[in-house]
Length: 102
Image (cartoon, one colour):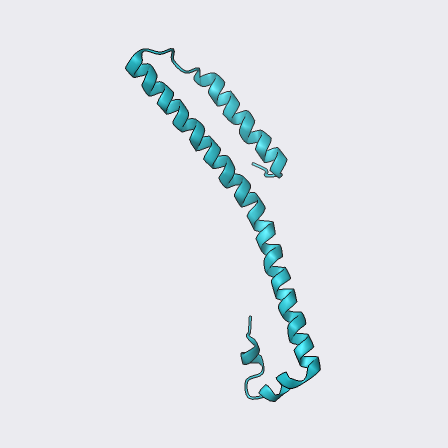
């Protein structure tokens, strides 16, 4: 996108006109709205996915820790089938809530 200086290069005197000033102000407002819209459109799903991935990694780390404790101290082994089912349920639920289609 061209800057104001590029558009009015060699004709800076036009910037003093009230109509041109209003037009430039309006263009800046529209640019801000476009940037905000693009950010909102892209950011919502990205944040949801990042949040979901962080939760998945946290769950995986907890399972690994539980497995290490089982190996070290002889605790009851984790129920991986239940863990996987819970993880899938969580992912599909969040995707449905955030309208993310896998």
